[in-house]
Length: 134
Image 1 (tube, rainbow, N blue to C red):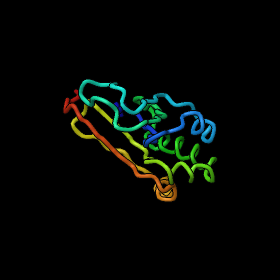
Image 2 (image 1 turned 60 degrees about the horizontal axis):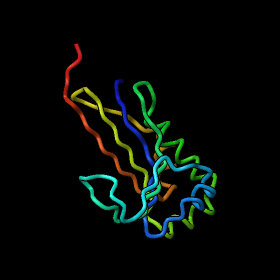
Image 3 (image 1 turned 45 degrees about the vertical axis):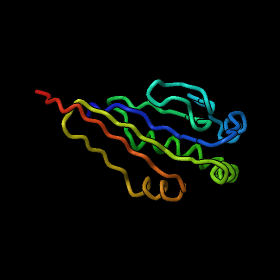
């Protein structure tokens, strides 16, 4: 399919407690940015603390499996995860890119149901370089 990218669970807010989140979810952040720290010349100083757990998507891997992997982790800690949802902005972000002019993927009804039940917002960012494979 020649699609690459990543799916990320993102938790943003003031005074994000990295250790408490990692203990609650059983996940170690792949990236944690403190409020006020400059991590990019384009973005400048971070307006919030940002905890992020990223799952890479490679050519032959399913976008759906990456989404489900993250949702399953939050489901296991559902009671405690509700506290995180109440105190912070929490969303799942999927970035997908391809060399092809057209990108497509599908999600099963059970995955869509699980996404809806998670109470998370979902961000999808899709980038195509528009090349044609011969």
